[in-house]
Image 1 (spheres, rainbow, N blue to C red):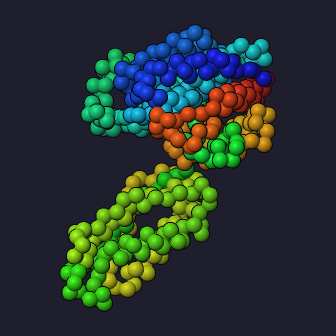
Image 2: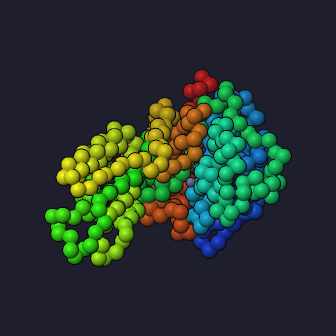
Image 3: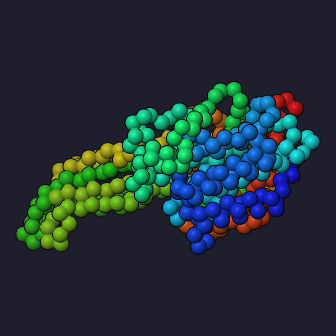
Length: 411
Ligand SMILES: [Zn+2]
């Protein structure tokens, strides 16, 4: 099996951290000068690793192996949140580079093909997963025309400013790839809490959002008897309370739900509310759990309406995102490599955060690996992971990449 070079891996990660560095974190929003500087630096590192390198028309950086396929595409995103951590995205990008180098240096694996990639704008400056969406052909001219960055810059202007206006975009062509692998920091605390080092991702969770509206009768808070009043807010309070009572009965450990926004109108201490609205978001890898949640909401709605005081409207608050399942075969390769490098200290787990494979799975079989985040902190300057975990994760992915490609090539 190939050996990754821990010193080279850490040194490249630390260099990438200096581009756009602010305090302990990194500010490298997609298509900003710092983002483009990082992409040009990466392109240079890919070239030095003997990869055939392209920066495409949205800023995706692809380093293509000179070996014939079948190939594995390995990477992540190199843009960051507006005030992001140094490993979110960067970790998986440098893993792709290091794995391409490590396999190329080992007599046993030097003929295998690893292509490395740094996707553009996973972090939604202009459009979430802009680079991978562009790669799978998932961007319409309308979507592109409407895309505006957080600072108000129109996407096409940002592309021009980055010098990419006339640069072709890379799109997926069937035939070369066995699939796509991405490593990422966990961004949560399951691994650290359990004293484990590796997470083999089973699925990226599905997300559903509901908006629940309650219509009552606005009235005087003193003169309207409790028996007469049709207080819309009582419907909201009942719904919220019963959700928290009933959902745990069908939830599993990683299931989450959030009632992050409420509105009560007119919102005055001396007025019985005539209208209330509750926003609910639910995430799980199992659609049956999300279906069960919707059934619970429907049942509570019937109960509240049956008393004849309040009308309840339930509608989707967003287009649902379906769970994205990782390839079983790739998971088995990652699990075997985890067993070797972190025996008894790894687990299968879902990802509660979104990642490029949600988009890429339209064209590619995908798998993901997590390493622990210290204190579960991410999307913050304080984001960090232990060096030993960073190095171990890269070796696990390198071993899995080699065994996946050996299987695919019959070597
Ligand atoms: Zn990320």
